Amino acid sequence: MSPRVEVLPLDGPAFAALAAGDLATATAASPVPLPPGFTHPAWSEVWRMRAEQVAADPAAAAWVTGVVWDADRRLAVGRAGFHGPPDGRGMVEIGYAVLPEHRRRGYARAALAALLARARAEPAVSVVRLSIAPSNTASQAVARPFGFVVVGEQVDPVDGVEVVSELPV
Image (tube, rainbow, N blue to C red):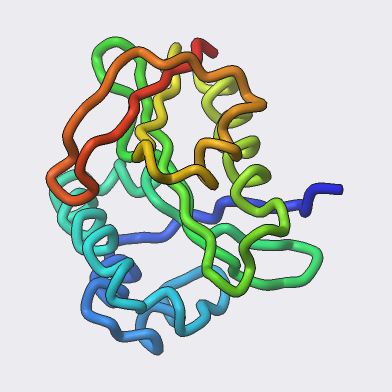
């Protein structure tokens, strides 16, 4: 049975605090308590990018990375969201990560399902994209049941080579 999750939005102050590694300030700005893993250095680049993105376009906060919240356990277990609002062709790209201590419990799949449901409910969205490193077999396994189709490859400046897959919604 999959856990029941919500993806709760964060705002500019929360992103800025997370990018600075300030858990107390980030939690004060967050809709839910955040665990220490949210300020792990491996996540700081994502928070920095989102802080800059939302500072430039405050409306983007409704689309970008939020907290994966296990509503039953009342626990923040990861982060997930779109890379931004829909582009000119109606495409949104999804990103997600689950804290190590909560992996292999269905959270990534539940977050991906929640984001796909949101994308399907948004008239401006026509296609959803995932970009996954070929070596990331766990994320590939999460995405496989949803029917994404490989459309190419790209080189991400942070993550290296990624396989790009899309799903019409």
